Length: 201
Length: 230
Figure 1 (cartoon, each protein chain N blue to C red):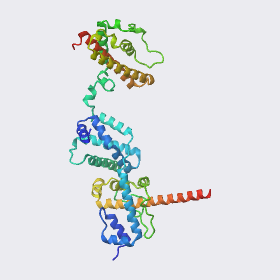
Figure 2 (spheres, rainbow over the protein chains, first blue to last red):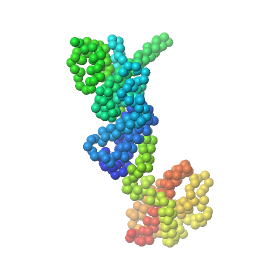
Figure 3 (cartoon, rainbow over the protein chains, first blue to last red):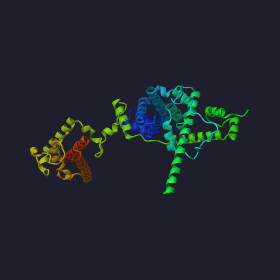
Figure 4 (cartoon, rainbow over the protein chains, first blue to last red):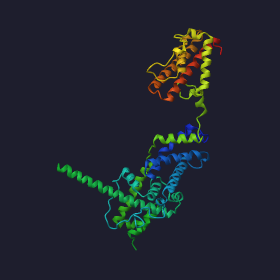
């Protein structure tokens, strides 16, 4: 069954077609939800909600855009709506998302040599760092850098200005950079200790 | 006036896609810290793109819960063909016999037809003393009615059906093959019920298999009665 056939049959309520569409797209939707909320239980609920909304509205899909794009946007909307209902102060982009940060965001010390990340970080490190971001930073970063949304799209989805979206993204990247540099320093320290231990034995 | 690092950072923040403006590029040539910052942002962005390309499979329970909800909201239905298919091995073919009243009526009809042609008196191991048929010790809790049916129908092979052997060999072979298939399926279902006596689905499959054998035997008897004209 092709996707187009599955969509047509799903619009008629065919159970097999629904499952086909789910199998085709569930991985990507789940990955998006997981990265945006950071825990599996919530991601599972949001995935289910997203597909439920999709199947309720599938009769309105007319094919003007790619189905995957339509589904993707719907999933993002579901996630954002849920996050807005749950923790409004944390997801507001109009204030600092890090309560401990007294400035407008992570500061960069000018003149301090930086550890270069190129070639040193991998996906696991980055994923862990993303999970440590404050929710507002994490959402914008995931939408822009991971999922490929443009700032004007993010502004529309999150009900903020384009400038705000760019500002939050910049702060997210700065914070990620700090976290990843800490990770690199920790790894280097562990390697040195391991070298000492093996050298001394 | 040369660009300062804070200004460069502001440009980096506002820059979305495309190359940096010339003053920013000029600043990069002279500032190691800003070069490192720009390089790290690129590394993070590139790695994030790779993350975006990765998919993570949700647990199967997500689909199960979703499907239950869709069924509860009557948003989905099984295709009509699946309900009407009559494959002996498929789980959906016996759906029409799920109603106990329909199944019981069909069973009665088959037994009545068998009695009319003296089938019961010719059947091997024909035990007409239903009271003696009780589930054996150590076996699963197959309902008594099914035990009766099992005794009367399952011990019957196509050879016992009068007149069948006079029919077209191809038809006879086809019926024998189908009976063998159903008998094999019955054996599998019986084993499932013995191993999982509380499994209602296994019992339903077994019941359905009994029904199908009855149907096949009824077809065979019908052909023998009518000389294969139907």
